[in-house]
Image (tube, rainbow, N blue to C red):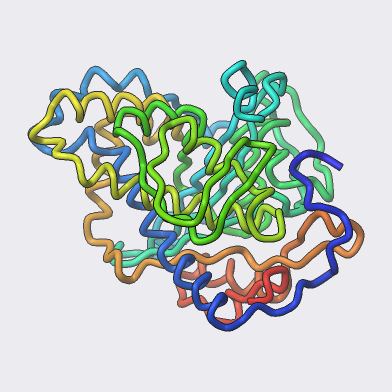
Amino acid sequence: MSQDAIPPGRPAAPPAEPSSRRRKKERGRRRGLKITLGVLIALLLAGSGSVYWMYSSLDSNIKGVDIDRALGEDRPEKLPTAGQNLLVLGSDSRAGAENKELGGGGDVGGARSDTALVVHIPDGRTEAVAVSIPRDTLVTRPECTKADGTKVPSAERRMFNSVYSEIGPACVVKTVEKMSGVRIDHYMEINFAGFKDLVDAIGGVTIEVDEPIHDKASGLDLAAGSHKLDGTESLAYVRTRHGVGDGSDLGRIGLQQQFLFALLTEVKSKDLLGSPATAYRIAGSATKSLTTDEGLASLSSLTEFARSMNGVDPSSMETVMLPVAYDTQDPNRVVAAEPQAGDLWKAIRTDATIPESAKKSPATGG
């Protein structure tokens, strides 16, 4: 079993949680999209009015991927009133000596997509929703083309996060489009290892730990309570899963969303306009961690996209997890639960309200 697999012996479906815990999870999910869009806007600080001149030299930090060219014409239809859909990935590389010190392996090459969210911004952009796709979800990977032009045949029962490491970001977009029928308009990737410098540039991030976390794999040892994490500790926090819940990726999703919210809070607490040096340092770290599709791969494009979302009301934002159930052949993996997943994607495609039944995930009992 791989390091990221769910520990063997887990029952096909865990016992139902107390209603208070379920309510707490739901509050966390609703809060999640505020986190997602907040981080995007934080990364787009370069376009904030009078300080724009400071960031013009940071254009070269942003890496661009030509998603449209890689995918070609075999894509879902773009409906005129379907709003905007953004695929946000949190990628994670475990290579290098620094990661070895964190229990990340050090000798593992490449990177993995540890976090994936389909952010849907309805037409008119006054509200939004994000669908979180668990990394352990088994999917059918479509035929894809690598960056060097090599064609890779389609394959069934592939773990979702393996698509990124095996083929690349364009294939992740294609996989999401095939499994959902949702046309992805933009792609944004945040490198978790890279934001270590961002956290240190901010001066640390304060998080609230509800239950003690003791993870020998990452070296993370936190008592319940408030903690100010530096960059190294923050990287361990977003990676940890062994000391959280049942040890699966489903628990880690909540921690990552919580951390991104705390990160945004720290950024917003800084007087960026009053401290150009701090603003430049933070923006430099943020843009070095960022990869986008070619349509957003400049500060001016990011600024325009951020300003187009000014009408989004944070109080109406919501994050839901793709409904999943434990795979009957391999309890270490999950699969999309039907009909809930199909109903969820249909609502996203048609810009409709997501029915409550489409938010229930058998794997979490909620």
